[in-house]
Length: 336
Image: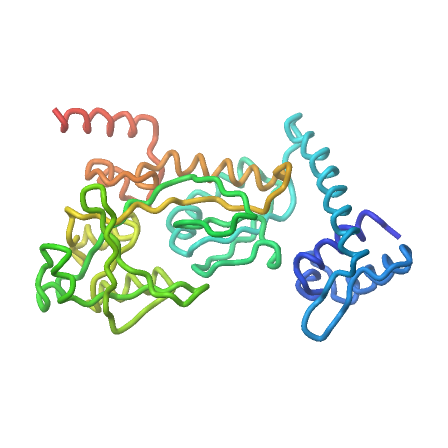
């Protein structure tokens, strides 16, 4: 039997906690995965997994063998990865997941650039505001916005989203413009809830150096950013989200900024991937490219200056060197 392949299949089954999910992520049939695990157990003369109707459990021998497999596979991957620096182009399937608006507004318009640099990588992109389990779902890398909870993963901060509170003119005409945070008690919000916990998020504001959280009331809640924004545009209540997502609506007058003197706390944007001693070449290529893409985009690094927004509005394209120089010159002149 191919022992190396069997070790890879075994670790995938353990991490996915399912023969079926492991087969999907390995692009194999469930029967093939089952046959390989049975052959491995017969060859080793030990039972590695205890199978029940609900889940899989490692036996003591299986746990020890799993740890050994992880070390061996990591050593092999690290050795192979070392050749990437010698000019061997990364290749293979890369599965990534990200919020829908980040994917459609930031990543997709520039994806041809990534493919031109890395023609050997096939990218499978999932759009979702729901959290995914990188290990069980077989995802190589995700883009996440906000504070991170899972300490078992590696995170690389790539950007910072400046936030904004806004409402439609029709809503403000009916309910009035809030002048202070205290006025929010007389207002309604479109609510946003966590797909993981179901918890509804508070609105937050930075007043001086202090962050103030405000629990809002509302008639509707979403866990999808696009639906959340559309509901605000329709006049269902105040919304609070990353500024770059609302630029078209602010520009057209469909939304108006509220409480500009007390902006929301900026949210970090991170690339997250499973912990490995050595990052695989295909994941490293994607992580480096996204980091570069965000660094070229002022609005994706916490910027909200009107001069930058005006130059940067069209399609959220990264600024050229000449445009970035012009922004810096205009900004300096405006500050004099």
